[in-house]
Image (cartoon, rainbow, N blue to C red; front, side, top):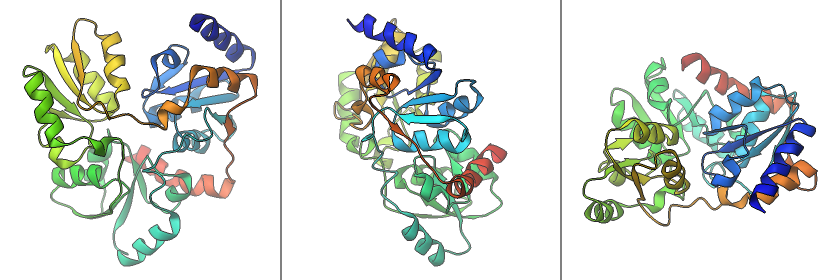
Length: 303
């Protein structure tokens, strides 16, 4: 039955001219039918290159919005209308405008995990993989970083020559992990390296052997000559690495590190989107798109 559904999806995406993008936090059965798998910005850039007129984003809303910003001529569909990102929604544009008044000489650096509306008020966008490099390259020595205080703290600690203002936002999935989780996991698997995402709390990143983006974590694990790893990011990555590296052992840092918004999308949802009976078409005014695109363009210039 599973294979039959996947075969029908593959048939329909060709018939209806769809490119399927799947964030790497999606389940493995969805990754198997995707045209491209990766983190949010890598998928958006890939979408803009493709010839298909329709894009199905298996992820969350800000990711589909980023695709629309970079590929406005395409019909962009989000696989589940309710799949949002709590971190992206923690700050709104009016509040950011007030913060900018409080810190008028600060460059506003936005994590890619923000809404299109919020990006219209920002100077430059960053991903977890590019953040350190881009912040170091900025002419400004004063940074207002939004919305993730944990990623912001990680950047601040690694770029001590600059001054930072951070706000109290963050990823509710990654913030569930604690130093106690690391100690417990290390006691159970003493030979394993701890690989964590910078959205984790500082008490967690301080105990890690490697801190990096999701793609960075996967690359590190695949290239390492070590055989055991404790994974401190969304637990789907544990399964994906098990498939990619069956000769190695992977353990979740916490059983609770699950993104419920990412898990909203099922394989049948993908099928129904291609049938035209499900999914949410992303609409955006050209004014918003162009304003939001400026901080992404600046990221591409610096990165």
